Image (cartoon, rainbow, N blue to C red; front, side, top):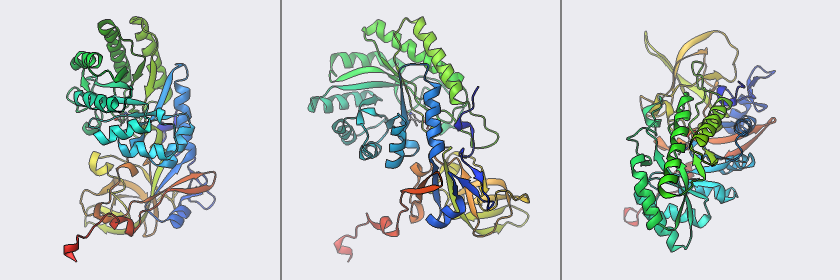
Amino acid sequence: MNKSTNQSIKPITTKINKEGNLEIGGCDLTELANKYSTPLYVIDEITLRTICKEYKKAFKEYEKVNMMYASKAFMSTAIAKIINSEGFGFDAVSGGEIYTVYKAGIDMSKVLFNGNNKSYDELELALELGVGRFSVDNFFELALLNEIAKNKNKKVSILLRITPGIECHTHEYIQTGHLDSKFGFDLTQIPEAMELIQEQYTNLIPRGFHAHIGSQIFETKIYEDEVELLIKEMALIKDKFGIIFDEVNIGGGLGVKYTNEEYPPSVFEIGKLIIKTLNKALKKYSLKPPVLYLEPGRSIISTAGVTLYTVGSSKQVPHGTKYWAVDGGMADNPRPSMYQAKYKAQVANKPCDENLQKVTIAGKFCESGDILIKDINLPELEEGDVLCIFNTGAYNYSMASNYNRFQKPAAVLVNNSQSDIIINRETLDDLISHDVIPNRLD
Ligand SMILES: *Cc1c(COP(=O)(O)O)cnc(C)c1O
């Protein structure tokens, strides 16, 4: 089976250049660190476009596919433009993500609005901007969305988010499909939801089911179980309500390779399996092929991104750990402290040195848990070295905070030896721009 880009730890354009430095997208990483300062998110356009194309290719045997990028993995107007140009739509989970897609000038009918507690304002904004699909999560939202749609005299196409009761072996916090998950309708609640839609919520048009079973998934069998279950539920809806669902959304979740020990399946492998399972189940229940929605996030953007840091202070615990601290940490990448996530790294200005030593890379934030990489073998470090942590495209910038009143880093897009800022580094004034001093304190 062909390999795909989510199976690579590094962006596919990563090289060691003539100067002996790491290079991505034809750009020397030490020069990028110099020019834009650090911490710096670097996104490789070729890697990003390649995985998008691989997804399309992997599913081309099934004629009706809507690829929806899960915006929460990394969203900015430039990223939205690139992904849109690869023929993807967007799965958005907030007014902010919807607004970003809108400001990038994208056709809003290609947006699907997800989430377990969408607010009145967010739903209203989504309806005003012409968002194409709403994945309705619960009874409360059915009533709310119907009310807003009715006020605006609109009919809204919806998917019903369901909890399929499928567990995947990933970190507890990123499992979503198990039975007592906070997301979606329990299968036993579907008949009631459908009755309400048919009898009361007449501004809602049910188009299909939506499920998402978790993230950083390595087991292909899970997708098989999920597809079988969703098609079976579609058949039940047809029998019970005479309604033929013409869409099915199986979510995202495909894993990526953060470390040498991880082996995520390729998109071609899951593509083949999902299509095979889908066709078999459709035949079994005599259903016409629905439009298949996929919502990959991590596997689209993770491998394309790296983070550059400058190495600063160090500490040798007597008879213990050797720490090296970098100029970022849990505020630009909360995943190690939140999920015990593991990463690989190289020193951009000496990627080939062989005199490796075991060190721990600490961040600069005021938490003992702010460790980016525990026990990694790196060449002897010095203050000023540029450390490149791989596979930080997903759930880094999008989860970044201003903890310790630190400015969020910039992001640059690299391609063909060119680098362009796509997100400016926050300034000190940005940090206080929302602060207000009441008059009485003056
Ligand atoms: C988070 C999420 C995704 C994307 O998951 P990845 O693991 O990043 O691919 C897709 N769909 C839904 C509903 C999600 O919540």
